[in-house]
Length: 153
Length: 373
Image (cartoon, rainbow over all chains, first blue to last red; front, top):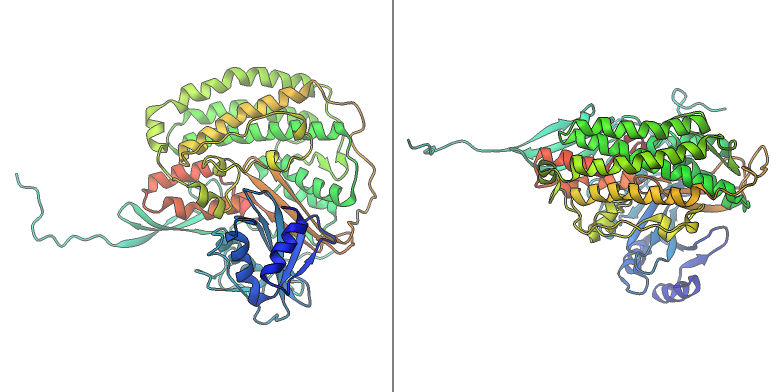
């Protein structure tokens, strides 16, 4: 499917989505956290979109907000789409887990939790993956400071 | 004699056992927490981070030329392809026109890297399941490739041959000659791999039906590379999203449908033949021309997001760069193939024995620094 056709189809499911292709080689969708799980599961289950391959799940700190970026590909149609979600809550950022849609999300979400402190509802085992349980703070956040381990030029 | 135990109060119970972080079959510092009942595995839980260096955080501090050097240290057996991934992302973002000579040389060295990685894997995989000789065969052939790399790039493992805009310098005058010598040599040696190991009955019994992964699960777990293709899942980035000079050659994507350890084994061995064929198609036709295009000393990417995937020896490596227009990336993420491939280990190992876990892990071909980025 072309990006235009994808946009027409997906906007018919959920009206308030924001689409953009600016500054990216893929079609980008911004979604509100409460609609995230519904959109993603529909993107996978719908036969026309059938995004069955979550090839990248990225946590990102926009300083004002924390976000997650989902890169999806369809192994039947070979089209690619990017879904973005963000929240301004830095104390207790939470999104719905998508591990029930793509099993690979289980590890990727744990990585995001480990480095950004973003929590995922309904995740089977949300605990630190790389760092020790006693570790304080979330290293990939922009405001993280560590005078001993970080070398800043 | 009656050997049955009457009124037995013997019972089995589940318990934990540590495999690693210094276990020879984990090939690096990976710790697996096994929950076992007798010798049957109930759960495998990887404990990661023993060599995590937070390369993604370091990238936010470094310039784009410096980042290339860090990628060597992820999957060190695919170092050239990792470098290429970052360079391609930067070049696409800057919309640089890369000379054909660069593309062809990158592809040739990339395929040599893949063969070197697969021969090493073949050697240590055989050793994991008890066939010690394979180690020496694999390392013998890999040595020739490392010598070629050393002559051209100055390094044998972490090559740093790519720079944004092309190559660090031109190939060594001996490169074409020695590569051809290697192809001729390896064509006589690769059949030995099959006679020594592939047809061995003991080896087949340890591999067949062990660690079965279905195609649906392979996609859902984000498996890529030979792990995905062993399950019949067509996931070769070189086929679906060609880069560098791959679109100039013809090659087959090796697919097996059994999904077990033996299928993954066969995919890698046959891929070495395909890589040889790709190199053969290119080695006599390296175009003349420059080996780099000029870039600014300080590279600033335009504002925006850039993504590039490449096929390393282990599978799909993705590079995501979010740039705000400065000389450093705002956020850089590496989607490493090993991380996704490791996540399915629990799924394929549950219900098997500890010895089978070693065989499953060996055919996943994990490189730990690729998982602990």
